[in-house]
Image (cartoon, rainbow, N blue to C red):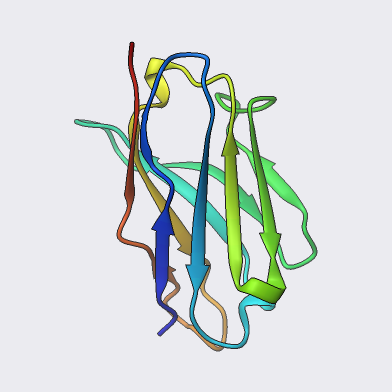
Length: 118
């Protein structure tokens, strides 16, 4: 199974920026659709953004224009750049690798906390 390790979370003031990173194990990273999800206290986990192997991207309406996703296949890494952060962006952010024949059940990272507060 592919292992995912996130980093980059923390406390930031409203309007600030953070960059999350997720490093994947294995040799087939470039073939995976990767994504970021988030879960706020008392709420269901929700999709934030995805990026396909062909670098097509998809964003939740709530983050469009503020967040970007990118991938570095040479480093098995996907990044989430979050700008103009709002208190409602506060959540645990999870990296996700979509199911693939080489990783049939997909994979989740352990999560990283993002807190937006003054």
